[in-house]
Image 1 (tube, one colour):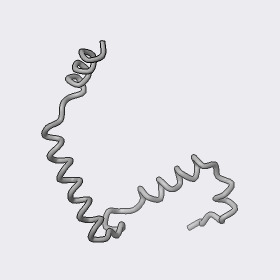
Image 2 (cartoon, rainbow, N blue to C red):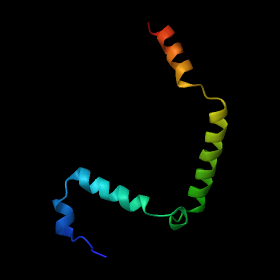
Image 3 (cartoon, rainbow, N blue to C red):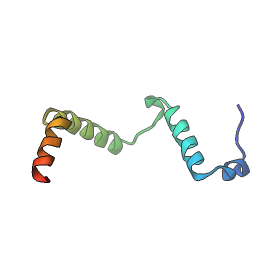
Length: 72
């Protein structure tokens, strides 16, 4: 594996460094991301909320029509 040196990393532009971070993050599997119990609890809460909110959501078409009526 080729490892970048600190100097090589510094020479990258900020967007290039962010892209590298994203690639590294995306390369990890879910079970490779250790969570504290508080983080796990929060994640489960957000997923539950997402499932609930998804049932009450509206389509983009319906929202667009409503916005066009409110803001002609």
